[in-house]
Every structure is written in C-alpha cells, then in structure tokens.
Image (tube, rainbow, N blue to C red; front, side, top):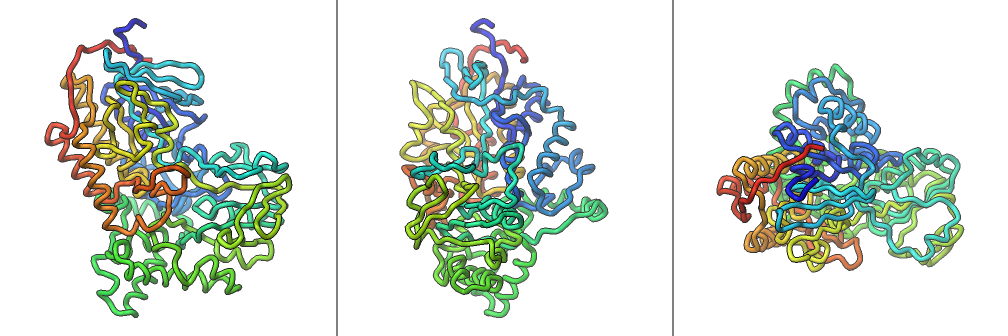
Amino acid sequence: MNDDQLDFDIVIVGAGFAGVFQLHKLRASGFSVVLLEAGSGLGGIWHWNCYPGARVDSHVPVYEFSDEDLWRDWYWDERFPDWKALRSYFAYLDEKWDLSRDIKFDTRVTGATWNEDGSTWHVATDNGDAVRCRFMVVCTGFASKPHIPDFDGLDDFRGISTHTARWPQEGLDMTGLRVGIIGTGASGVQVTQEAAKVAASVTVFQRTPIMALAMQQRALTRDEQDHAKAGYPAIFQTRTETFAGFDIIRSDHGAFDVDDDERRAGFERMWQAGGFTFWAGNYGDVMIDEAANRTAYDFWRGKVHERVNDPAVAEILAPTEPPHPFGVKRPSLEQTYYDLFNQANVTLVDLQANPIKRITAAGVRTAATEHEFDLIVLATGFDAVTGGLTSIDFEGTNGRRLKASWAEGVHTHLGLASVGFPNLVYLYGPQSPSGFCNGPTCAEVQGGWVIDLLTHLRDRGVTRIEATQEAEQAWSEQVAMISEMSLFTKADSWYMGANIPGKKRELLNYPGGIPLYADQCRTSAANGYSGFELAQGPTRSTEAG
C-alpha cells in the first residue's frame, strides 16, 4: 500500500446496534467499510453482558430495528428479552445483512492518529493491525468501559470475583455459593434475582437505594405478535416522536392538575403498564418540579413497602425521605427483587450506615463485621458515555488527545463531533440523547443522519469535516441550560459522571429529547451542515479489504 491509498473509506468501531446499522447502510451506499470489534461476537453490550438475569429494559418491538424485512419474520418469546434472545437477534441480523464478512472480531482499537496532509486516520489495534481510512465512526456505546472501584484488598480475595460486564462467557454456576453483590443498579438487581434462587446465601451491599420499577414481564406468543405487527410501523414512527425513543407518551397533565384520587389511579395505570411507563409516561411535570416528583416517589415507596415484611429493611430500600428525586437516576426494572428480602438466604447491608472497609482473603469487611463469600459480584457500573471513547488514544490535530481535551468537561457539536478531531464522528456518545434514549431508536435516528452526512461529503468531493469552536460552545451551553431546567442535576448519577472519581460533574446526555435533537440535526443538514467546516481535497484511491 503506497501513501496515496486507503484501506477503507470508513472504519466503524463497535458491533452493537449502532455499529451494525452503520455497516449495513454504508456498505449499501457504496462505501468500502470495515467494522472492528473487541469481542468475539456481535451484539455490543449483549456480547459482554451474559451474567444470570441480564435482560433488556426496553420492551419489544421498540427494542429492535424498524426494517420490515427484519421484523416481519422475527419473533420474541418475552416482552423484555434476555441476553440469549438478543444474541439470537444479532445472529439473525448477521444472516439477513451478511455482516460478519466485513467485521474483524477480537480486534480492540487502541488508538488512532490524524494525518493532516492526507486527511486520513491511521488506526491501531491490540493485535498489531494498522488500518488507514478517510472517516471513523465510533460506536462504543455508553456502557462499554466497566468501572471497578479501588477497593483495598480486592486482589487478596481467595474466591471468585467478577464485574457483571465481564462475566465469564462460559457461565458461572452460583448454586450453593455464598454470594456477595456490591451495587444495586440494573445489573445488581438482575443478578440478585437469579442468585437468590440457587445460592446458599446472598448479601446485597447497597450504597444508594435503587428506585426499581415493575417490569410486568410476560410471555409473547407468535399469534399475538402476528396480530400486533399491523401496528408496528406506527410504533416505530411514534418512538421517533417521544423524548426517550419509546412508544410511551408522557401525560399532558401536571401531577396537581388532577385530584389525589385521580392522580393515584393514574399512577396505578402506569405501574400496571410496566416497564418504563411510570418513568417516561408519567405526568408532564414530574421530572421538572420537585413537588410533583415527590408524589411519584411516595407512590413508588408505597409499592415497595407493601412487599417487604421487615419495616426496617423496607425503610433502607425505600426511605421516607428520598435520597434524590425519582427518575433522575436511570430506574431499573425488577420482577422479584423486593420480595427477595423476605427470604432467609438474602441479607441487605446499608453502606451508608456500614461502609466497606476493605476486601479480605475471605470476603468483605465492613465497619461492623466481616462477610465471608465464595463469589463477589461487582455490579458497580461503568465509566459511562465518555469512557468507551476516552479509552481509545485519539490523537487529532496538533497532537491534541481526546481524553485530555475532555478532562475539564465534554464539548461537542450535536453530540457527534469535536473540535480538533476531523472526520471522526461518534454515535450514542456524550451530549447526544445516548443514555436517555432507547438504543435501536438512536441507532436509526442519529445513525441515519450520519449516513446522510457521509454520503453528502463523498458525493461533493469533501475530504475533511470538523466541528467549529462556535458550534461546540453553543451546543454545550444548550445542554447545560436544559439540564438546569430539569431535576437531573440533583443526583450524583452516572448521567452526571459522578460515579467516577475525578470525572467532572456534568450532565453527559442531551436532555432535550429525541424530537428536538433530531430537528436540530436536520436544521444543520439543511443549512449545508452548519456548525462544521467542510474542505475539499484530492481524492485518494481505496482498496476494499
């Protein structure tokens, strides 16, 4: 390969929903494309998350692609599929779209260096491969970098310890084990529900109560889905018109526009609908007004206390005074979680009153006692939204590094690109809807815009695109302004980057919702991709790999 040749027009990083959609569409548009994936299979988070109980929290058919050629002959077994079902779905995508022929698995991108003279990216991987491309589309997702707290003594533990996101692919049998679970986010709730069925004992270490909602899981029949499929196009259209990319419509009424009885009846209807309805479909002021929010919290708290026999345990799980407003941390969905604390083999440890001092050879020592375990499960979350991007050593113009550039705070234009990093776009990343949005919806809405952009650049001979400083500043100001109007800033959540020591506390997701976000992307495109500088240069030849 000489200096005038590229390996590919585009390198995609990550084989989750966003990445495979890009591969399928860009390849069909005539680009030479390769997708580099660190895992050994498709699915992104559904390749890595194989712990017992791992399950999607978006219901189907919302959590799938809108292409009728896919959904017409695809069937789910449950309303909220588990990780095995998601892997089957990705295998189906592979069969329909012939994805794997242009994917390099077990290939982790470690760095990428911008070459200004050639307007190209030189991509490095952990297996020594080097790839040269015109554009990079990074689809690492918001939960690709697990966070393991710096527990003193973790390496001393004689049993098995694992993060939920690095659960052994061959499985891990918890039958008869003494299991300690640190963390009560989505993965903590899910693995607890499974461990409590078979383990000798389960000890749950809770720092902050999780405001888990009723999943209302149920089986789905083929006949039921065949009947429902006539309505799928309307569902897929609706999900582009709602804040979080679901087919759940938020109420037009405020919590105090109705009397107490009607409000409680409304809460009950949302609760019985299950999933995220009580969050995404609640009264219109619940996420912006603390008094309205408190009515939702008190209803949720009552639901928990109805199910937990010991009032002291119930108070730890759902305290009288909320630790933060309802919904400003991503709610988990549960099926049996609160009932488990009535079982003799399940114990709750309140880390606010009894913090962890260290991990020992035998287990976990708190301020009060030492707990002995055979297995410690670290359900401790992720360096979310930015972690997957900053774990890659991107070197842009004038030696600028992405991680250093974002050290004092994230700055992007449209949550897609940053100054100093030309020809680099990232999906489901910071200052985009990301963690506030259903994944397949974002893959199509945001990803479709990127495909149109790259096609526009190619057709007009544009070889370089970079966000402007002015656009970046304006976008960051908009994110900050909308976030201050909401209640999201009132919790130390991963939404705010507050779970990672040293990370700047700021809202990492775009809080204006999918419709407003998509409208601003369309406006930029209609105005010749305003907010970006476009430059033409010599066309280089491409060798398809």
